[in-house]
Image (cartoon, rainbow, N blue to C red):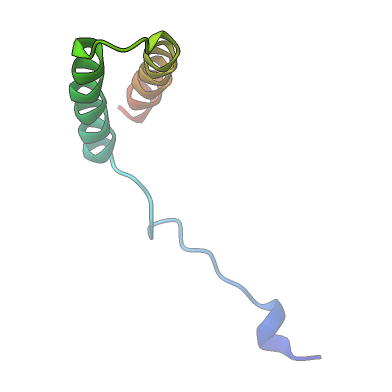
Length: 65
C-alpha cells in the first residue's frame, strides 16, 4: 500500500473567509439588491431569496465577532 496516498493534511487557515470578506459580500449584495429593485421586471422571488441570504449572512457575521 502506498502510504502517502492515505496520509492527508487539512490546513484550516488556507481558504478561510475572514470577517472583512463577509462584510464585503454583504455590501456587494446590498448594491445588487438596490439594483434589481429598480428594474421594471417581476423579480419578487429573487429579492426574497436575497433577503434570506442577508439574514443568514448577518447571523454568520455576528457569530464571528
